[in-house]
Image (cartoon, rainbow, N blue to C red; front, side, top):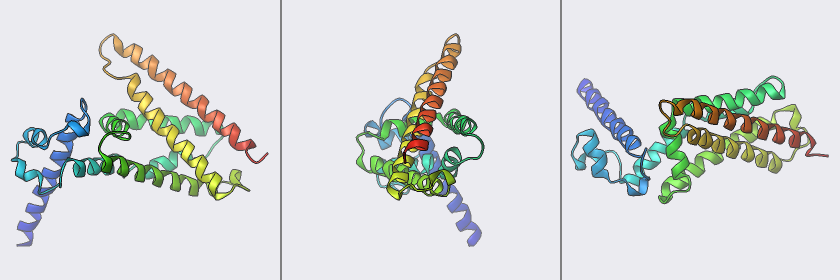
Length: 216
């Protein structure tokens, strides 16, 4: 009996993941507010009724995509912000981590960039919750940094928010730089991405300088 239940549970999880993957693919070219559940179930090859065994509606599916896209990123975010080495080395490592994540998960990054200010309120709220969690965790890590001596909790939280907002902005800009590139356009896309990364590094150097003199 337990073996049968295990098989059923595995199949249920497989179908759920297939629905998430199909939705993410469809969302490459449209917003969540325009996505119909029949589109998703048709792409997976299941009956529309099967959708409701996993999600209440497309907003619920969107919230699950937010968790999939951002839920596993907390350690990566901390590593990008709070890392060892000189300031330039730390900045380079942070920007490289962002770029590597965008290259590995472009569809998830595109989904978050579009839906962060999109028309589906529960999804906007879920993204906001995740970004605030990132900022709280980064603020806690910054508080343990000797460079943060004398900083108030409110100022640390403000600085953490700047870092998190910058990472989201940079990820979106990297995605835009390579959007739709193929053939001869690939070289131009690479140059555009390199320009985005160079700007991101300069912006982080500016934040670093401001951080050093904030208590002045």
